[in-house]
Structure formats: structure tokens, C-alpha cells
Length: 191
Figure 1 (cartoon, rainbow, N blue to C red):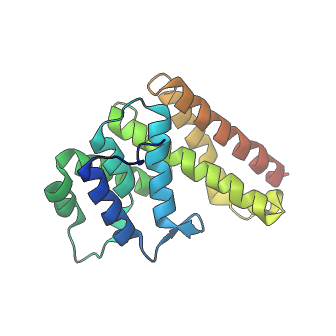
Figure 2 (cartoon, rainbow, N blue to C red; figure 1 turned 45 degrees about the vertical axis):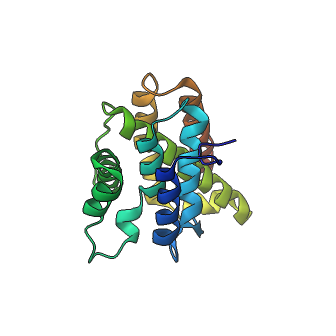
């Protein structure tokens, strides 16, 4: 049973419908974007006992700003349909995603809902990268072709260390394991 298993609240049902609609035609990590959104929400539920509904909804909709038409003010829609907390968490995750393109992305761990959603997002993304690398049959080559990703691994490790005392121990261990696997593979690819 997951946080998305029925019976679930009407607002989570609505968020799933919106996520399905907004994710249609988009991919993340070579899979339908909805798979990523659902996995982030489920990962939160695996590690956070009785997570707040706003957190689950934000996890489901966290990539909406990248998926919804630019003609739509997605934050206005999120606030009107789900409340200001969902919009705030989604906005913070988007800012974090954009910051990864900067030379020295900041690490922020003082906002618990954002930290939980961000940690779950990283767990899902890093685990997916490992899966994709393994599926190629050439893990070393996979990472050798992704120098930008490999350059971000120290940032992700610094995030994991900063978040360690602020997230559930099982969540921290999950992120650590996913990151360690990538670090080993990337180190092999750098040789």
C-alpha cells in the first residue's frame, strides 16, 4: 500500500488527474513523466509516516511548470486549485532544478516540506540514472558521455550530507545508497 493507494483523499485524486493530463507527451528519465511524478510521491510515503496531503500533491505536480503551456500561470492554477503551500513547494523545487545549471548551486535544507520533496526527487532521479546506465550494457560509457551529470555528483553528495539529520533515517540511507552507486560508476567512467 502506498500514499496513492485507494482510498485516498479527493485532492490527491484531483492531483493525479492533473498530473496525468499535464505529463501527457512528456518524458523524464526516458519514461513517461507521470511515472517520475508518481515515484516521487510514493518515495515520500515510503519514508515519511502519514505525509501531509500538500506534500504528496506537490510531489505529484512538481514538474508542472515544465509541462504546462507557458500561456498558463501554473503557480496561479496551483494556488487556486491546491492552495499556497503546494504552489510554494513546487516553486521551490523548480528554483532548485534551475539552480543546477549555475556554477555553484546553493544547498537549502531549512524548509522541511521542500527538503522532503527534493530528497525524494533526487532518490527517484538518481535511481533511474543507475537503471538507465545498467540497461545500456556499458555503464562506464554511459557516465563518460555525461560530464555535466558527473560534475553535479559532489553537489548531490553535499546535499545528502546536509539533509542527513533533517530527513528520516531511511530516506537519508536511500539517497546515500543511490548516490554511492552513481559515484562508483562515474569514477569508473572517468578512468
